[in-house]
Image 1 (cartoon, rainbow, N blue to C red):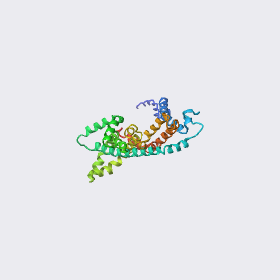
Image 2 (cartoon, rainbow, N blue to C red; image 1 turned 90 degrees about the vertical axis):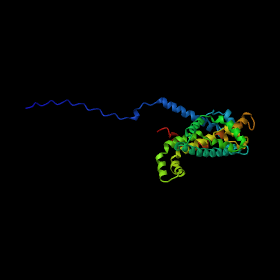
Image 3 (spheres, rainbow, N blue to C red; image 1 turned 120 degrees about the vertical axis):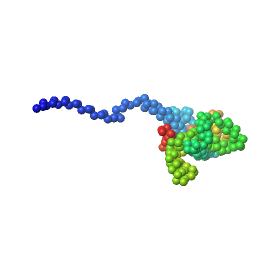
Image 4 (cartoon, rainbow, N blue to C red; image 1 turned 180 degrees about the vertical axis):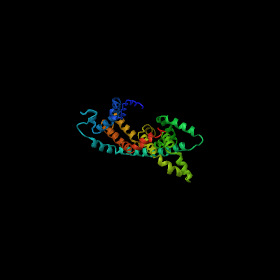
Length: 306
């Protein structure tokens, strides 16, 4: 008769795995403070612009509310009415010129960037690498360095002091071509293009029916960046335009600032118009950014991941 074996001592049960609780993570106060500082840094000038636009000339320089707070009087609508009627409403002409230059150049630059970027990404042609290397080098050249050569070229073509003198140079956007090339290379699969070609579609139909819808986020991004760049351009219109009625907002407001600094044409009262004019000039850009924000973010993020 066999002896009963002694039972092995029971092992203690393993503790259950701890679940990740995001609430137990230590808060990164340094990062939060840094982000708060950045928000304050970017919001403060806009807040000053909004507050200053409600003051008259006396409130701007001798107000009791300080630079970052409202004065006793509220003169925003009065300043706005004076802005649109001063000097026969020349500010409205400047606003219309900026809209014309920005959207004409933005659309033209986007069309050229889409065609060139798609060609660089999906076609193999002689000199492609050399041409693209020259394009990348053009991205590094400051736009202000090309203003004087552009002025000489336009003067020989007798295009100075015309709208084309601002629109045509602004249509060349090397960064937009680079962005479209990166997006088309990663966002448009070659398999879809080959399938469309096997179904009998030509290159134009393949581009418009297959590639172009997939490139929509990048197209909106390039359009937005081109419009904003042309809208904020100052040195090029200053060099190629001599008629004040053809100035964009950037050059026109600088003209008023020069008159105010020389104490001519209204003296310090022009500063109130400059402030309100600056506030009105950024409203179209704010609307464009808020309306196209999702496309803008998606377009900039593409190409950063493989």
